[in-house]
Length: 125
Picture (spheres, one colour):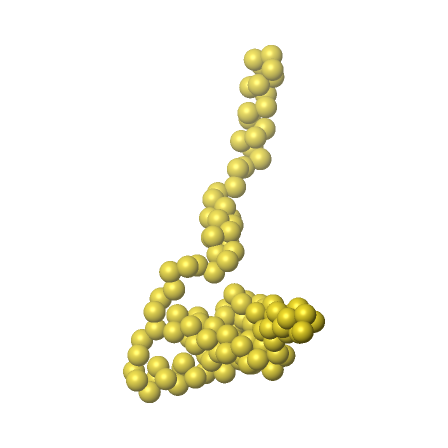
């Protein structure tokens, strides 16, 4: 009888394997696919290209993302819905913009640099 009373809590704990983090591979695969479809749908609604969606979500299943993107595209076309302009810029967009601005600045001419050096020497620097 004592063994049964000791084994009962152990059996109850092991029966809830999902709560311990042990998931069924089939359920895990279905959850990943559903998440990928949701990501693809959200990307299409945010008027992002499918390539941008892949770049922003590298861990998502590409096939599921594409399926979600296509489903949302068809839904939006059928219901004549407009997309929402994304507020969050793509990662690296700020760096690319800074690089463009840096490239647009006029370069310092070598003649100006040479003119500065003799003046410094004349001052004794």
